[in-house]
Length: 470
Image (cartoon, rainbow, N blue to C red; front, side):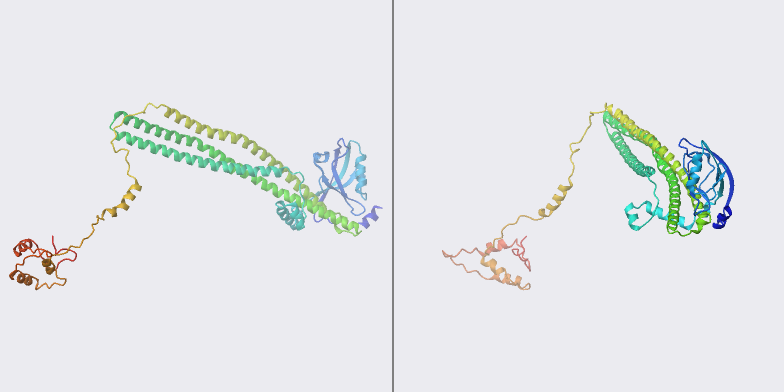
């Protein structure tokens, strides 16, 4: 019977992998199970192998059996040529403890990490940030983790990092503004000290000097406060620049292991579908008829990837919990130090200025001490300066000259003959006529000469003047 079965099945194709035999005794749990799932078997596959070892079960705690190992016998009975259902019933028939003979598969995980697995990892990275509807519309098959609580914690980590970054930036701006305020205090102190030096009144001089010293003391206390607060920024920066990046590095490693594990899960699902489709068509599948070693290799790689994924997931959860607890304790403590230092500074400043024994003071001020020149008034005066150059105008009245003066005013006088004409005019004998009633009296020539003697007659009279009179 066995010879006929050996002739029926093809020779096993182990793909270069080796196997070693062994026996293990596993105690059952209360549900009469050892925690393994079985695949292969008659009538399609000549081998019965372990598909998966479940967590927190007797088989996983014992640690000998792994995915891909072949089952050879149960309690001394061979399982060659049996179906997986028959082997499962044989294991359930055992009481308390079951004896299993197996062939350990020594698989190289690098052999199972093919190009197909690498491409599936890339696809899972793309689908990770994509909505389900979009991935379905694009026809992207993928494996997902149900009820993954770590996704929410990663979102909380991002919000915590944003909060810390904003807190550090705001603290730096507050300290910078506080330092600017201290410089104002120092300038006030220097100004009042200078006023006190120049003040002649002794009491006023002492008051200004003391008031300036108060401001200088406030500036000195403020600088000391800044030196005390500065380590707080270093502590917050350590959390922001070291703790969070270290956690993110662990998260990146976890994400890589997660995508690799999901890729192997997707690969196993595709190979299962391939087996079901060939079985439905009653077509032989070479890898199944030769021991299904390729499938068992992927099962072993999936188990190793799952163990690595679970370990990194545990590390990420621990780091996130520590980070969260440090965040709660550290933020409260650092903010309390930050606020208490500022409160202490302002309390000291209040006590310093509360000792107001300096004012009121007496000072000698000039009458013009509080009179200030306004820029607007100067501009208004400058606008009115041009008006001062304009003198008051007088209406011009044209005088009617006497006949003698009219004769002297020639519109186009000859500069060479003007003096000779006047001499000839004066040398002529005058005719004395009696004035009539409607004709004005003419003055004697002697009187006219006497009136003209002090006058200065120009050869070219100025236009608009009366013969150049001064």
